[in-house]
Image (tube, rainbow, N blue to C red; front, side):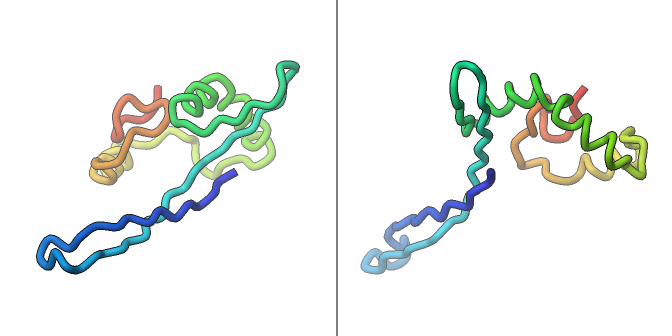
Length: 105
């Protein structure tokens, strides 16, 4: 489940201390719910989600890949990797990535 949360940030304008500025920032919270003999577990933090996807990501993806065959071989060429390397350098690494621009092993 993905939920959009709107955070309100209030601060004084540095150029006009008498003015209060209100800003609203969107952020998205991902929640994965798992059910086992031990009960229901909600995973919401990045570290837990990373561990979950490392353990079960391939098992989750397998039925989708069997049903919907990709039109490419899932092995990017050097030119594609070079292009992607220029994008998103300021972002956090995705689960399984050692850094933002290095594909998972």
